[in-house]
Length: 451
Image (tube, rainbow, N blue to C red; front, side):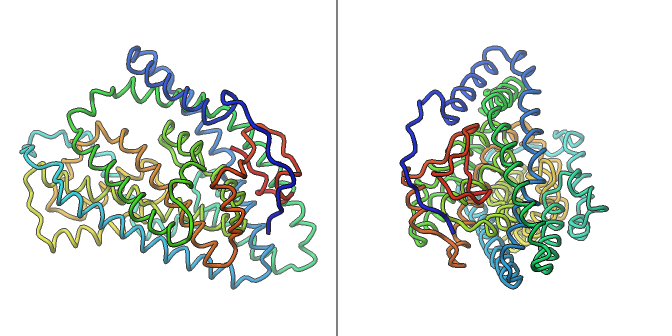
């Protein structure tokens, strides 16, 4: 599945590493946003521009890796089996995340004692989110997976539409047999080309992280967190508990350390932290996971699916935020009502998958169906939602990385030696912009890893 190293990678100077550059950029962004908020707010185009650059290459990355992966399998039953296992895994752990969030919210009670009068809340500030939530029913979500045209899948920005088209093309290509081999070879060459573009785009990651962080601090201010510090702190601590406790237990059973995985993905996590967008690290996450020993077809299928169906951080946020609103407005929820809230959240979390600002939109969808909790109470957390979105995105991407490795092992498509080498730092991928060294990795397109 993967080649072996023939020479140890050269030691890279710290200041040239993407990790160091992003750390410096995020730090500078925080300082400028805090001490010069007007200037920080003006930096927004830098962050938005970087995210648009990444989104520009996400569609071709997913299409090429999935279609070539399925075609290269030869056995369509294998692709179906991987997809079924992934969905079962996503359903279990996303539901577990909802339960963990609900338990912590009941124990900590972050909204207790606020005694907010519902009539004093600005319902107009959240009306837009409520309206968007109503537009995204579960049936609409299912229909939205099918693009209007093949081309529109690549222009809509919907990951699931690209994934759907890629699966259909991959199946068709696999059924062509030898006649499809020239097309498959061409697609693999295109994959190498597209990942070359990704490497160039990632050179702008420090600039994007700087702009996004400067805007966030300049626009919202660190001080805006203090009024709801208990809520933000509860959410962050719960997410850490889920990552270290739940996902950490899973990784221990699978034979590797969650902390080593976090260190291996440190650049991606920093980029997500700086941009508040898990999509900004999708291409490099896919590449790193294959570089760490996961089979390319599994990476191509599981990671894009996980970005829509395995939103652990979003699910934790939903139950904590919903119960916070109830507690703050003195709405008592019985065990039965909380169970109903959990069931509604399970469905709505899938129905709003892939929607911009999915966390807040999904919360609006959930509260709209549970009339006991006032939807206008969302106005209480609107000001700090931006600070919680970073944690949502971080938890989501970590959950998807763990899911991919687990499913690869279930399928017997995980190179354990390569995984151990990668997580131990004995197999560091090239940095962004490095020329691909043939002696470092096998010449399969996605195995050419980068940061």
